[in-house]
Length: 185
Image 1 (cartoon, rainbow, N blue to C red):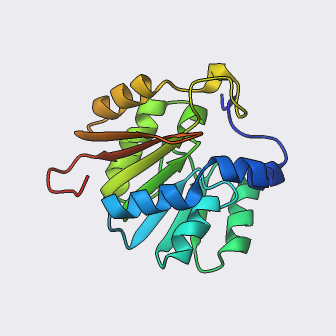
Image 2: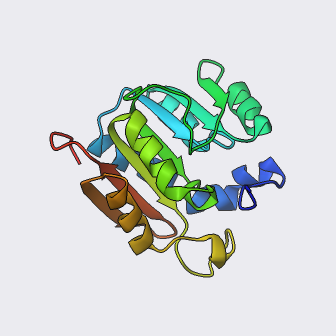
């Protein structure tokens, strides 16, 4: 169980070459253009790269991670954020707790991907953002851990999302998911 989870040096997550591949500003801008959120839950917060970017834009941020070291790192970076130990498959917050749920590079690491998407949908008022590595041999996790865009779309539909937008970025795949007919997605 949890064999795909990140267990190496957490400083690697903030390596400039890795962060540049994620197009953080573009992802955050696209997310907020689609979902005009006031608060965000970062599932699999890691070292708070996206939580920090959302916070810099004035959003209230929270995050969960299975790794206590990641939670502590996030608390140190964003003292006014709310960070807790938790699993994507069992998000410890009530229904519709956050406008936006961010899942950056976490879906491929979960033990039950469908359950993780269902949980994200449950706690999101407006929508869910999924950022994943492309399905190729570029730097990042092994190909066997990566997800094809078609797999993500199929899982999203199975999880109850009715609006599924896919934006292939230069080095990543961005998905904007919504299940409410009145949402901006």
